[in-house]
Image (cartoon, rainbow, N blue to C red; front, side, top):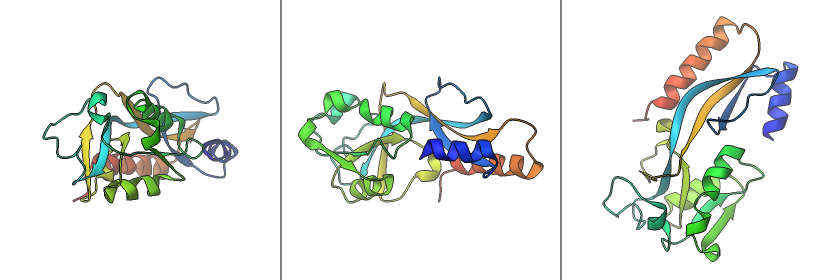
Length: 173
């Protein structure tokens, strides 16, 4: 899916593609990646989940061991950087407790309902009143940005990218 969007970008069908990637990821040849924010990994769960009520500002991967169902998104529909992030907890989780969902919406719904927890980048604009977001030590971060075609972008595109970056860095309220 991501490759198809990049092909559309390179072909001129779309002007910009939102992308999450490993901060050390290599850029594509015909496009330029513009970083909007670095989002540290965080455990996302409902407020009644044991990981939300630990009473700490940060969690460790060991805290997640035995914490119930670990809800992840299918790697076939998730950006590679997010898949790598979610796989980082697999050494600490009982495989019988892993629930794979077809999309990020299902992951967030299950976490919000208290059925399990997940690991996602902490993007302020994605904060939701039904979700507890607790940073996870040692899990790294994901760079969130946009990919645009090489060359001089239009003023409108520049303004859009700037506004998107500001919106992603601002917590909804």
